[in-house]
Image 1 (cartoon, rainbow, N blue to C red):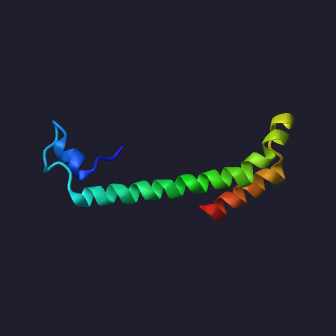
Image 2 (image 1 turned 60 degrees about the vertical axis):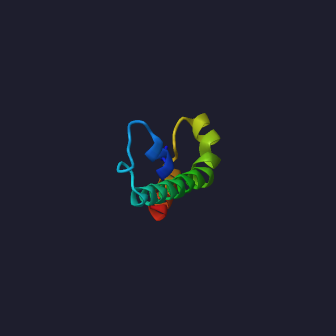
Length: 78
């Protein structure tokens, strides 16, 4: 959780010097990057993993070719 500058300034432990607007902007960027990463992972799972989940559960293994396809796709995504 990130504090706004007003919240940080009013916090009993912190004073006005504890958090700057620059730090607040950095937190917003990191949060946005985290959202993008989370979205990428969720899409990858939905498109590349979940469609094979039942078959892999039934067989108890990931077929070699499927594993290679997933690996290649993961490398593409980054």
